[in-house]
Length: 603
Image (cartoon, rainbow, N blue to C red; front, top):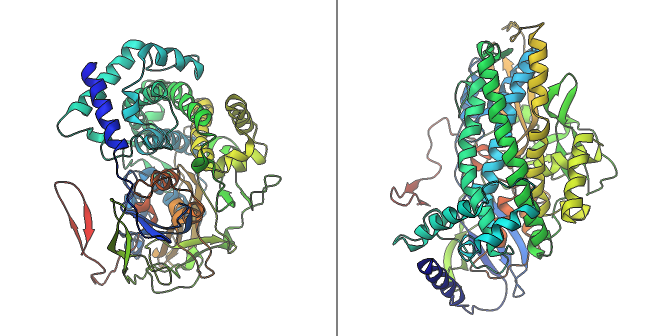
């Protein structure tokens, strides 16, 4: 243990000895590129005043991939399998919504059994994504790993009971192993391994060493849960990622549904992940809420207070876990109905030729890459350096700017929880009120980075507590009905259009299709991270990412943890948000990938 303590002191010394360089007075541009621990490539640029407050912010997706144009001219029955390749994380989300779009276009009503099985697969995806996001992508924005090495084991083990009656992975011996594991990383010649290159010791970390150790133990336990819940989805999906059991009209996994052993396997795995959600994930967010509710950077009011969510997770006939609706201007006294005809995508500041705000049925994806401009920004040592910067007057992102009736909207777990809560969804009202009472956090705190992070956990808890309702209803229905797929025909002399829409782990996802002559004529996917990460529109209105960064106080511009924490709270999936290709083979940009370090740079 002496070696471990010595290592902690050395690390802390390095943090304390970090130079605080003086740069010229006046607004400075800070560039964070790439933002790591997300899916895809994202760049954030902020203009910071001498007081450390962000005066303006711009977010850019810097790499692209293509699927929407690939769908054109193809048989509609093949497109869902292609669309799930938009992302390696959100595979089932796109697979499901693409399938639903085709069914909506063709007027297909799928069997009740198929609806429930799709929900069981969806529940597995939500639980997987939310647990992985907090612990392995977002958690180290809240948890100081180095601080955990100073924790008192007995004290930490007792403290865990403050947040859960049945804490997981917090026995003295378990915590000792966790501490020893991380200490080995700290003393290794290559440093902290997966925990290297972070801002340990940053002034906005608030957890005690013991609390950090508890969360770190759950980080390691979550790796086991990640494997288990992936297996859970594969029971009905055939494999994970990229399940293959959905077809237009229903599902093909009838043998698994009729096999008691397979059904029991799903239930057992579900109960294990539900226990982790309730006694580790919930506990850690409650702990974070207690300690961070006085931290200005995580309690800062949001820049966009418009929220939109769409019903999802059908657990019974006319029974969904999450409701549809819109909250405007933070007014939680009412929820408005959604009119999907009011959805548009603007490309004024996006790298596309057509700048018009188009409805997704008429969307265009014709690339027009204009690059960056010469400028200066703050280097890692605090001094100004020459860089390529975003031009806010021109185009600067591969992401479009979706709008609802001309307004920016936030989508995601917070939107889903807020809409259901205001609509009086009894399941949601119960868990939200319990969390607010347990943590002493006021309702208005939901409109913050802390609220967004807590909402993702509350969504996972709602599924953990009520997801098996679909399982029970499926078993009962199979006793009298074993239909799993509806029949249909595609008339080549008819034109069809349809949409598959609903909330997925990152928010409201919609796939839009036009079918003509028996093949896809046009295809668009408007994904959650497009809603949240889009650049300014034609009126100068910012999307949620950009708006949330404006007004943020940054403690140290050479260690912009506050920026990363806010962006991560949305769980960005930029690979989903960007999906365009040039079918003529024109080179839009060129990139070099360093095979040793995995770094990417444009040339």
